[in-house]
Image (cartoon, rainbow, N blue to C red):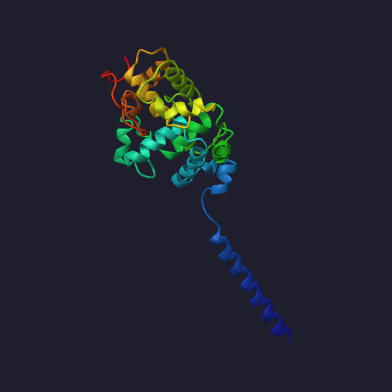
Length: 242
């Protein structure tokens, strides 16, 4: 009887060890997704990459809520160019030949959540805000810091409104109905419209931010009168900032 009990004990012990081994094999190796998003200061987060599809989904939430944001204009142009889901396709060069990361979903997300005044509180920025805190070990937070040369959405909205309330120009018909209806923001592709207006009349004082953008990156699509929101529809033959 004692021998039988001993045999049962040994068998149970062996089963327990096997289960523990199987459990340990099943544990994920490397940085954990949720862990590096919530606590990006961990050293192993240097190996973590926030997936392009997640960055694109976050950006989609932001642009669905406020499609007129400057970064959403860039995203529209990238989608139209065929740059692909990771933004690295050859079409990206038609948006900017100087910036290889112009169509990166993460870079566009950073533009909204880090650089665009007042936009960081939006729901689509939740993961970015926790992941890209000061000292973050997630490499994308430093390697893809946002589109530094793009003016803020607030500034573009202000400049386009000022131009279109001062004079009637090709492109103003896209945005004016919103302001005429008493809205603060125009429900149009603001950055594309800004590029169109300033391409037609680059000497306007409201085009100072356009000049700064196009001096920093002369290859940018919005510096040549036709972006993702429509063609130039005529106007001056002046190409780029003067």
